[in-house]
Length: 58
Image (cartoon, one colour):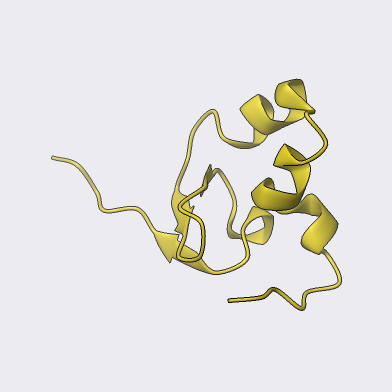
């Protein structure tokens, strides 16, 4: 599935292509969502193409 968001450049998959590991680590240090397209984890839904909340762990 392709992402048509104008903010795609700030999505985890686009950032991974830039090799900016420091920024990627900051954006995923306390993940709350997972991308339904690529499986990337992120702290904020705005940083993935197709967000899905992570299942709560008990």
